[in-house]
Length: 572
Ligand code: PPS
Image (tube, rainbow, N blue to C red; front, side, top):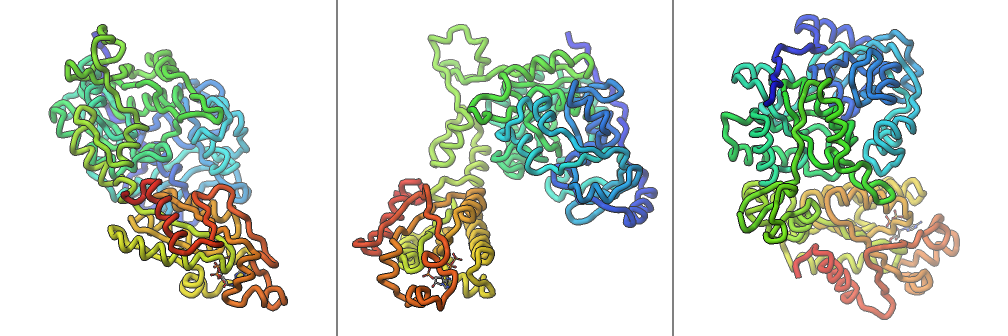
C-alpha cells in the first residue's frame, strides 16, 4: 500500500506582486549589479519559483557550512546542495554587508534584487570533498568550482522581479505552482516523477510504466533542460525526442514538463536534491536509478560513487523529505519473449538472449551511421538523433595544416580542396595564411600577441564552418602549440579537428626560399621571422605529419585524404 498523497496547496515563491515589481525594477537600476552566469540564472529561477523551497535566497555562510558538512541548513532542515552566488573578488570588494544588489541576466534585464547579508571566502577543497566526494577536477562540478566559479560567495534573501526569459518550448515549462495546479485540476493525488538528461528509449518507457504501476501513480516525465553533463545531447534535440515518445504514453496518465535545473552530477546528494525539487513540484514519488546523476570516471579511471549510493542516501531521508523513492531496475531486452525485463528478476538467464545497448555503443552507431534496432528505441527518436548527429562522413570538420613559411602548406591545402570538391557533398572553405591576413587580419603583424589573435580568428571561423556541416581547410604557420590546442578545443565542440604537420625542415624551406623572405630574414630586414628569429613549436601528436622532400604535392594531399577516410570523415 502507498499511503503517500500530495498536498497541492501553493508553495511560497519569492516574487513580489506585479505592481511592486514594476516599481522595484526602476529603483533597482540604481543598485550595484551582478551579471548572472548561466548556472546562476538556473539557480535563481528555481529559488524564485519555489523549486528550491525552503530556500529564500542564496545560502548564507551558516547555511552553507551546514549544507557542506551535514546536508542541513542552519535551522536544521534537510538541504544537500550549496546554492551560492559566487562572484569575483573585485566585485565583492565594492560591496558593504547589508547592501542590496541587482541580479541581471546576460542581456542586462534585472530579474531580482538580493540583500547581501553574508560575504565570505569558501574553502572550495572542502566543498569538493564533502559535496562531490573528491577534490578531483575530473568531476564536472568540481572543475566548475575551481575553474569557473568566483572566489567569493555572497549570501542573502532574494526578492524576485521577473522570471528568466525562455524563448524555446515555452508551453512545456511549468513552475512548481503551475504543476501543482495542473495536478489539482486533474485530480492526480499521486505522481511519480522521472528525472532525465538523456533521450528516452524503450527501456526508459518500460521502467516509467512499471514505476507508475508500482506506485499506483500518474507519471510526470520531468527532463532537465538547464545545464546537464558536458557532452550530453542538446536539449532542443532531446525535447523533440520526448515529444515523439510522449505519444506512446496514455495521455490521461502521463504529463511532461521541462525543468530548468543546472545539474551538478553529485550522485547521492544530487538524488536527494532532485527529490526535494520534485516534492516542491507536487510529486509524491521519484524514480532513482542505478548511478543516479553520476559524473563518470574520476582521474584515476574509477567511478566517483557506488552504483546504488544514491538509492541508499535517498532511502535514509525519504520520510523526512516527504517523497517516496521508486528504485530503478536495470531493464534489458529478452529476445525470446520480445519484452523488457528487470535484469535481477530474470530467472532463466542462461536460457534466454539478453540484449542491451550502452550509451557508448549508441553513440558509436550514430557516429558510424549503423543500424539501431527497433527493440532498442523508437524510429521517431532515432530519426531525431540522426538528424542532429549525422554520421561522421556527413558532419563538418577542420583540417589544420601547420608548418614553417614555405613548407608547402598552401600548395597542399589547394590540392586537398579541389580533391574534396571533386568528391562533393559538403562545402569547402580554404583559410590560407595569406588569404586570412588579407581579409580577416589585415591590421595584424607577427608579434606573439598578433599571431595568436590571427590563429584564434581562424579557429573561430573554422569552428563555425564545422558546426554548420562544412569543411574548413586552414593553412597558417600557427607556431604556438597552446594556441593550436585552443583552436582544437573550439573546433572539437562541433566536429573533428585534423592537425597536419607539414614537416618540411627549416633547411629545405630556406633552400627553396620561394618568396625570398628567408634571405631578408637572415639579413635582419624582416624581424620575428618564424624559424629564424621567432619560435616554432613542432607539433607533438598531430593526426598526420607529411614529408614534402622528395614527395610531390599530389601525394601529400592524397595522404591527407587517406587519413580523413581512415577517421570516417569521408566515405571510402
Ligand atoms: S601566423 O604566425 O600563423 O600568424 O602566420 P601566417 O598568418 O600563417 O602568415 C605567415 C605568412 O606571412 C609571411 N610573413 C611571415 N611569416 C613568418 N614570420 C614573419 N615575421 C613573417 N612576415 C611575413 C610569410 O609569407 C608567411 O606565408 P607562408 O605561406 O607561411 O609562407
